[in-house]
Amino acid sequence: MEKGEVRKLIWVGVFAVAMAFVEAMIVYYLRKLYYPNNILFPLNTGMPSEVLALEWVREACTIIMLLGIAVLAGKKFQEKFAYFIYSFAVWDIFYYIWLKVSLNWPASLMDWDVLFLIPVTWVSPVLAPVLVSLTMIALAILILKFPKEKINRREWTLLIFACFLVYLSFIWDYSQLILKKGFLAKFAELAIDPALITEVAQYTPTFYHWELLLFGEFMAILALYLFYNRAKKHS
Image (cartoon, rainbow, N blue to C red; front, side, top):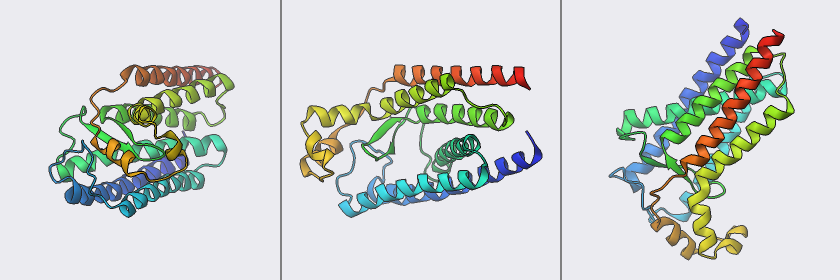
């Protein structure tokens, strides 16, 4: 990897770490207001709907910011992709580090967390997104190490399918809850149904589909290995 790329990688990492601190402090204030005991489940129904709506917007803006730094750092699409997943992963890991420093949470990597709210609630033990983030960092570094080597169709297929499985593992519980309770039509219309909010808030996740995550991780690591093996032969 050239010195210029290493320098950009460092500064994108610094940006992600700083952004993670800002994100963690927002969650710090929300936890102090709505979860003073650091117990997330069942969810607090006392949060005003406008705060929840703003949280959705904030999460969308977080992704836009990470995309923005990736577009500025990378030249070609593959480089932009690498910087995006790298910044996302560093941000995600340091988000938990800053929460541990400020709130002494999570108590362990097996503590459950709300990861995202778009389009439905994502939940999992903290260990799951950390494992995914480490894989993303490894893939990003490999892409930047071999800038002339393109990810081929087979590797993209593996990566896309891996993302789908990991995403499915995160949204499984709340998606099933919505489907079982018959709220799908209202949810599709983006209506805020009090009954839906109550059902979702009262639900406490206890089982995570590790098999989906691990299979997704296996496919991502396989794609990473295939890319590295091919790039090494051509270098």
